[in-house]
Length: 127
Image (cartoon, rainbow, N blue to C red):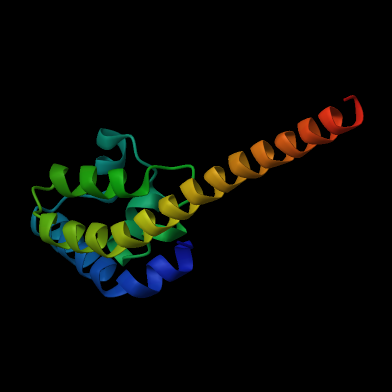
């Protein structure tokens, strides 16, 4: 699934998580810069998390891992929201995986068929 589709489907959940985290951080009177140093996560990433823009964090970064770490550090329970994200995406992940397996199986079958045809041609001409 593309990131923009993921963001559209889950934007409300992302914003809710970000609001919960930001609220707890303010309640505990913690600064983003201090938390950034403690968790070793870029300040910009923490700001994006608080705004609910997780997917603007680069793909090579473990985005949801950062969100979980940030929430855990501030003692914010986001398990319900994370399960909603996971459950809504797991079906599309399973469908993509099935498609990949079918594609691999078809490629193997096509190679086998091609090899068999070549073998039959060789046997036909040399017998």
